[in-house]
Length: 178
Image 1 (cartoon, rainbow, N blue to C red):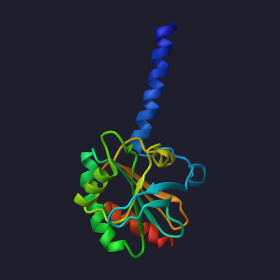
Image 2: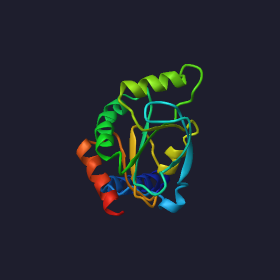
Image 3: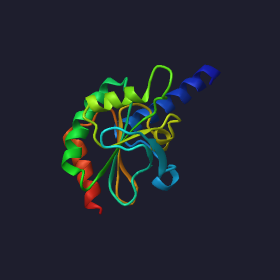
């Protein structure tokens, strides 16, 4: 067997394994206690949010975690489902939306606040310019959602826009564990 055949075989095995993983839908991720969670993020004054710091996930309550950016068109679409479900579950579930955008230069806190108001945000709004939360959740794109149970264990993650019904089902599962 020559070098080209060996490299082709190795590449084929890699593609086959990646395809099987993708088709199976099981994406390996760290256990909750190895993920680096909980972490603290800076929060900003905006509707439903006060300036300071927040623990993510929120201690002692199921938490919906939304990673977004103001430039992200799908993130705008995700806000519809989040707003609807926040109205339904605000008394039993914490909602935290976090952007990894850097404040300064072309983006100000007022820009983020204006985007937040325009898209009916009314819960904790966090800033994570170092993307620590994104890394802890294993997120590779935006929007990205996670639901944690009251013990702070991540029970579900989703890359891309999730429907209201799907997110509601995952919130209900987290509440059932309480």
